[in-house]
Length: 302
Image (cartoon, rainbow, N blue to C red; front, side, top):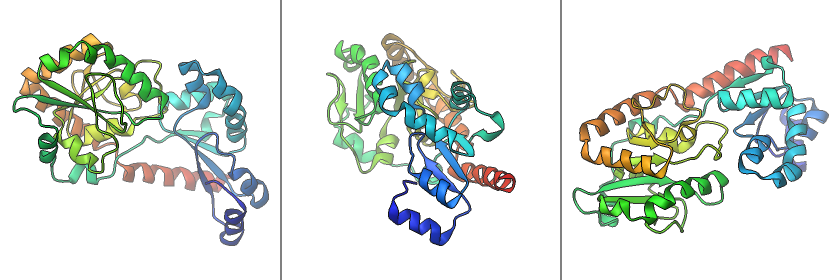
């Protein structure tokens, strides 16, 4: 919650039991907590300190590091999106483990129950029968997404994909490396995911993310065969290479995995079924229930 004059007046009027604040650099709740004495929990999906080190961005520390430190020090509890992020915050800011929990990201149940679609996308992309659509979702404006494109750029430039009957598309941006088709922001994204034969999460080790990427959980929920780096599957507890996805860390390994999936429909189907089964443990309804239990137990001790 970003607390301005109007929202502060609302807090004084409604007297909420607690505040749940998004982003570690959000200081808007400070006035509310100090004046209204409202218990505040911080929803940590990433960390400026963690990203700055991974990306080599000292400017982030200079601009936002102090905000993150102050925000973390003035909250009574932190909800981290992954065990890795929780461990980082505990060590970086010397926090009490008793007041830092992990609640993973999730997907709406509709992603698991909606009828399969996507047929129109194959027509719109003019995909020749027998060719394979490979989807990467990389909205512009995020450092990690830019790094992911750097990993697949050599593969696309070499023309290896086209020669193998593979069409690599990327959503969320209007520009992409040569050999990759940029689709921009699409309204029927779930249909695009359904249309894809394979999905990829080509995130190198330095393209860090605080918790499970929404796109990873969405791909799993729609039963997609996935090729991913270890970083791409960060925060997806229980995901095993060779069972829920194929592991690759380089452009060459991605090409090998994609060619393997193109020629082995049984493997593709097996990975998709295992992915969907795993996704059932990452629903927002379960995360909401866990949050409620944390809030109730902590509120009694505040």
